[in-house]
Amino acid sequence: MKVQLKVWRQKNRNSPGKFVTYDSPDLNPNMSFLEMLDVVNESLASKSEDPIAFDHDCREGICGTCSLVIDGKPHGPHKGVATCQTYMRSFKEGDQIVIEPFRARAFPLVKDLVVDRKAFDRIQQKGGFISVRTGSAPDANSIPVPKENADLAMDAAQCIGCGACVAACKNASAMLFVSAKVSHLGLLPQGQPERHRRVKAMVDQMDEEGFGACTVTGSCEAVCPKSISLDFIARMNRDYLVALAKGDPKKPAAGGA
Image 1 (cartoon, rainbow, N blue to C red):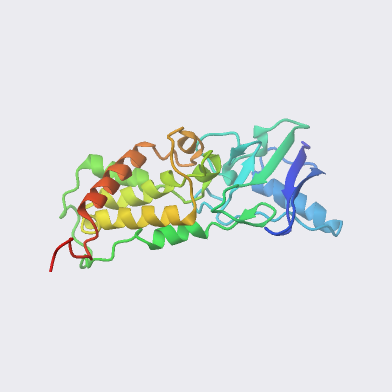
Image 2: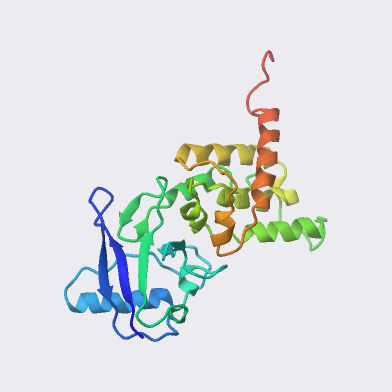
């Protein structure tokens, strides 16, 4: 099969960008979308043209590195898959496919289809971990965890930090990502000592990075390759309100000694 690609090309964030149209070589319908780009880049390189820059790593839907908007939808036409799990059989012979980078102020463009998502790393560094001493690995089942909590924690932990939620949101909100990272620790016993400090620090960092506010349109959940639920945003908001009510545990209360 052959398709036509309309690809966003931009040398760097300070240069103007534009869509450039390419006709693909003959493609195997069973190759992944990223494999298709590899083939197109080989064709461009053979003609001494600059290959299309795009992010990739594991190509198994685990790392969250692949970050393309395909025909207006982050990761492509299917639900619950990453770009690397989108296959060319999803398209028809002669289709024109529009490929763009994730667009958000907090994800500045690096080149072509590559964006800088270090903002997510900085949010994680503010609280996406457990720093209190938990001792050696406990025996199985020595810390009772309700099955409902364990299941919810595992659901939240599936977030791969790809940023599709941000790219799909009209406000470029990172609430789904942050709520997943907050919740998977906050639901487990080991995460309780820092639960409210964690949510306050991570939400504050999210705001500092320039992500927009959540208006609960549901577009984030719709494009998430791991189908992370909006319910985690509600859970995070409740924890954040509690954290505000408690105040900063590192600071003395007003009027205190």
